[in-house]
Image (cartoon, rainbow, N blue to C red; front, side, top):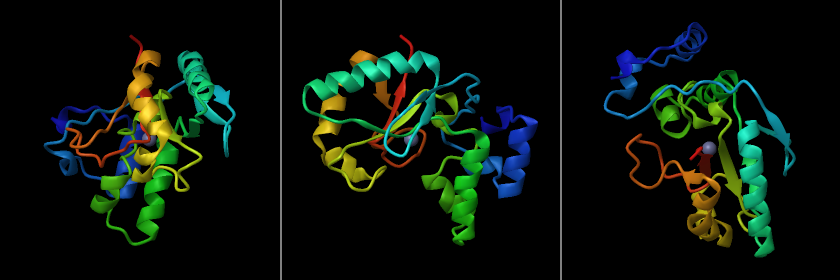
Length: 177
Ligand SMILES: [Zn+2]
């Protein structure tokens, strides 16, 4: 099924450079995400971050609702370009991590939901290391599991996800209803 994926020339060049072969993904339910074209900037810790304009209002409304209950949901990553994603993989390769191992923790360029501008990585002040499983032990995570759907945000990679990614309690994506 991955053979049927249309890789743009830019993506094809990046995959070749990084040594990513389509057969790596056989049996996984993956799709190529288009890169967002329009953005707004959001200020947050180590930001600003870029998201699609449609996501701004749901995000701010959700953040305020959490704040009203004494919780701080912090944006720590949002839009990423294909090139940025390739940079994340280059860094793994420089640490002599084999490409197939790198791809279990970093999505191949084209496969990251962050390309869409709809996905947001969230942290809590109680979690010192962002984008780790420790996030699931925070009150912010518990609140998100109960309320995020009201604002259109869903956890993309729960335990045992069919895409074959690790469990990512910090990664939430907005969907238009
Ligand atoms: Zn993420």
